[in-house]
Length: 339
Image (cartoon, rainbow, N blue to C red; front, side, top):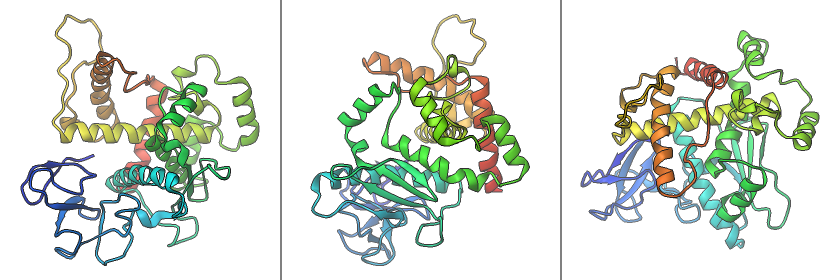
């Protein structure tokens, strides 16, 4: 994520800001220019209006016509009923995560075509499982999210039950968007598809059998050396999605660190570790090797700070050579789209 300034007084504001805390200017995010703009109260200024979901989804994006949905909110196909107050709170949280996801997709220049534009286009069903069963997942461009995942208590119970070190709403969305982009980035019957099968395995493996095996037996011993998560071991599709989500984690966090001038100079001690312990994300070139070289020392520092606060590691992952190869392959496909 980039750092943003109030266009009126130049003080630091956030991606989610609706008002400057210094000068009280009304603010909104304009996605095409990727910038924060000023508005006059709740009305029009400079040709901008607030998204029609400004209240319902706590949306701070702006549009050109009064009453329109912004580019993010328009991708939501189904949401909770207006009478379902509890679910609408979770809906607003999920929409916030979706806006952050879309910022990164646009920043990476990945194609985003909506469900209302073409068959199989990207869409979101954000649903509550309070009254009916909801399964988080992806099918033919449609991402479904159980809004119970926006409840911290529920999410923690599921994290412990499934033995997951990391579980967030944004993480869910990044995983499911990975499923969406796999057939877009990996052209069928191409060299990329052959290479993808070499790295992640043959996706033609029966998914139901793979799922049954995973939930019956768990991840195989030593999975940490080859997979970014235990869930990634279930099926090649899930390995791709987990790795794609991780690629987005790394890209976003490094961009945020660079935008805020965060750098790591390493601990002040004698060290024989051959790995670099210093990191300057702002100077890291775009290719994946340099990204990871900046990333690993940063995670050392972030985890040390988390432990000092008495909390779990902020980054509970280990990236072995095979995992790095998966991230590099995904990076190459993303960069090919940007050319």
